[in-house]
Length: 151
Length: 401
Image (cartoon, rainbow over all chains, first blue to last red; front, top):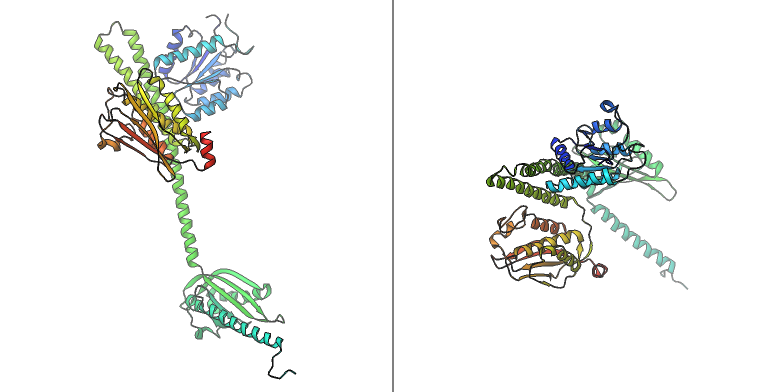
């Protein structure tokens, strides 16, 4: 997959990180993945701050964002991303356990691009992550200049 | 020509008017005298009591002969008297024509009470001050009632706040269940699945069955949590009440369960269903639950019979029923049917989480209706739910258009 963009995962649960990577790995989508473990770290990555001050500055192809996170929660991350001139073009997919209508409403209010409830069934989970990965990191054309695809 | 005994018309009229006036005055003074809820009495221009009614005696404790001729300042508290309040009151009344106040007054026995006092100035035809009319009412009781009302109000506000807090707590509980309990559950399912895949060749039959059971249990728990959440959301969701075409609701509900009925022989019998007043999506959920139960519990019949109909209850309610010729139930357990997670059958016989009838009951209660069930083992069951009828003709025709 030479045309694949980088996937940013924001997930605090190590099991979910492993399962997401496993799902992406089954479809060879896992070679360009950045994992951040809370909202603060995700923001540091996105804004090239702290430990990420020297990272290549292009945007990830997609961000898979959990909502319930330590320090800074997912909705706050989403809000900051969508309020930033350069970052707001990043497709953000909320990937959460929460069925709550309130979370869905607020996510869409803040401009989320997709909202996916993690299925209990592992097959469905693998399918969901695969389709998200394929769609956003491979099929979808990002806005010009948002991300430099690796060649 | 007119004899001295003869009255002129004017004179006669004058005499009659005078008579009527005197009569009115008498009646009026009797009326005033008889009033017991108000102290009504007169003062001369200097503040000396000149008349006294029964109400005044009841409220202030003085008899007429004790008080007439006394100065009215004895009704005031010691402090007010020292501050010259009685005199000032009369001055204000004389100046403005009227004085009104709510203040403490003193009874004959020295006890105090909160009084509402109104003083009106009395003047003769020439505008000369001839005295004051005073009306005093004991408002202690009213004030006490107002205080009690205020206390109850505060209590109510506190309760409402407590209720809101516990509601919020419940919501955050539901949220935790939704989010925090589902995560480990997903992991149990996912890792069992990975284990199954990874180690299937090295596992013996027994171990494979264990892993399979873990997977199925996790899935079942996931279903239970989802059902419980949907049930709790039902309590929080706002009902959109309007005219509902029950015939249409039933049609949609049957269409929804049709994928479970494809290879079944079911004789549907659907009676006339009138319009009712309710939330159409909630009512559809009621019918879907009852109909899919009927489909499920008639599974062992070669030909299932399911009847949906309506009984007009002659008041503002109608009662809808869903009847089947399926497994039925023992009436002795009828009260358990509508409980959350209550089941009367083994999971191997009939699958399900036990939330369906609880949902039916909850929605029906929210509509102000009742649920009930009749049945006998192996003789089928009938489930009833009552609903308010469509409010008026407009709703009835809107519902069926």
